[in-house]
Image (cartoon, rainbow, N blue to C red; front, side, top):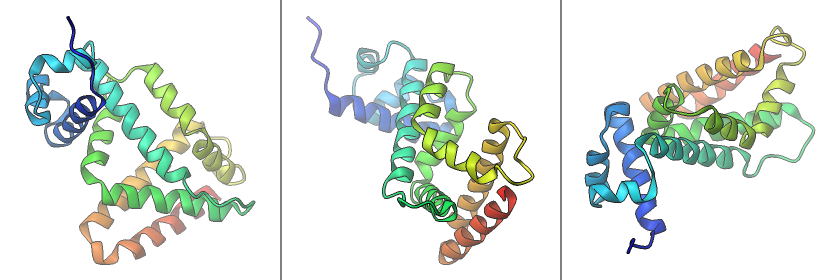
Length: 188
């Protein structure tokens, strides 16, 4: 008889996977993940059919967490600058406060193990954020650029800003503010 599934055990497996992906990259083995999670190796396959399924679940979990953080307390205003500043500030502060989760997400985002269905699901959940970025860029030099290109530019600026916020925590707020000003000018 199969053991009942435990949400706590599943969460432990996913947290361990995120930590090891951040530390070792995608080569982290399921045996290492199970050991870090404190579960028998076979338990991973009670919750995930394959390692790729686990990677996709971690990717979606991290993307969802980031999207929820960014959208929480989004200003209900027509002031695009205020809304974009909120998106930027919450995104960069989440990344600086969660370097391990951010590194894992970065690794997973470029992995060919992440399915198009997972990418589409994450994109759909973040549609409000994507729309805001496209709206902000509608009148500037990037107005005719493909959305994925604009998104990649914003992501690169965000990543660079987070890296410097982590490197220089005493200047994190100033770096975040400067990064936003650069983003705003690039989009507008």
